[in-house]
Image (cartoon, rainbow, N blue to C red):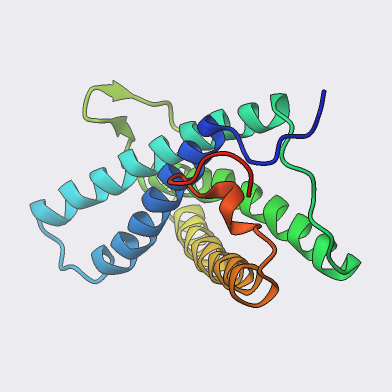
Length: 181
């Protein structure tokens, strides 16, 4: 099977949908932790959980799609860049799963069940444990900040390829451009 010049339309849609959801989720997470305890804060934490579970499901779909569909061929670049790109993509995929799972486990340990969109109760990942809840909360936060840093590097690398290298890399994930890069 020949290597396509661009990612598939499905891969592009999943990429940008997850990008928007994750950036919104990171921003919302930073915002909501500073809110005073109130019914409104509880509602916002539930929205955060729903978005996190949605990101988890979409990430699974994206990974399954990626495993079944060949990506475009790698562009010529120094081996350290190719290795760095691969490592950062693997790390992002790991974090796409680890962050929502850590948040879900934190919620379980804290005694706040996850009820997806208020209608589908999800099982607790761990039993109620205040000490574990504190550790999982910290883990969730650290992983989220790590993902934010990786996203910044990913964005900077995409801009470098587009503006400095002018190698067409960015066009392969551009939802508004069709055909060859």
